[in-house]
Length: 229
Image (cartoon, rainbow, N blue to C red; front, side, top):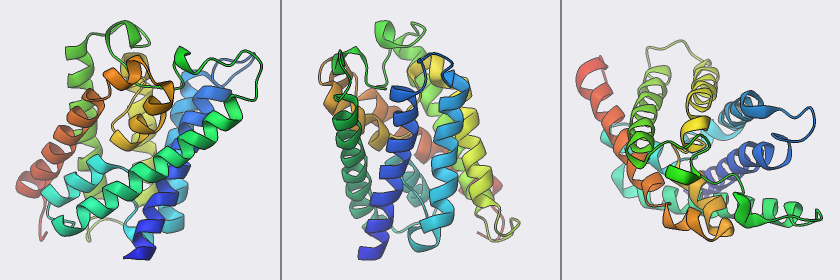
């Protein structure tokens, strides 16, 4: 179990450091990567770490994925809490590293956003709480459908990380303008606690909506789609 928890720690660290780091350092600079680059960065973090440590822990890197897999009958409920704790700690460690790097630039202001997720006036394009909630539920549900399908024993072997990484890229392409894309409570917590103001106040949504979506996706796949589960 210790190796699995370290795998989840490092996988979540890389997801936050690579994905949020691309948003903080490279999205808006001259000739920066923009929304498309950030979306691709998040997808690449999951793809690379799924190949690196997925064979150790299953490559969840996300509390909503862990709970969705429990609901889908693919993961033991008794192991869910240790996984989630490791994911959150890994994300926070990455958030701390990003803060230390970002604060080395003159004029850095963590309260400006720090890649945090938000709704209303803190949504990148001003989407309401209800719109953000629905987007996060739906996108996390479909993320679980893709994860469970791509990792099913009857799926083509060896390609699951590619499908999952591309799915996360697509999710970000859809929803960066809506919520700055969470679908992952550990990712949201990792930067919100350093942003320290409105992001903390709005963090509840980016736990509740992805978990509802993850559980919904797991149940849908298990009951309506899976064969020989």
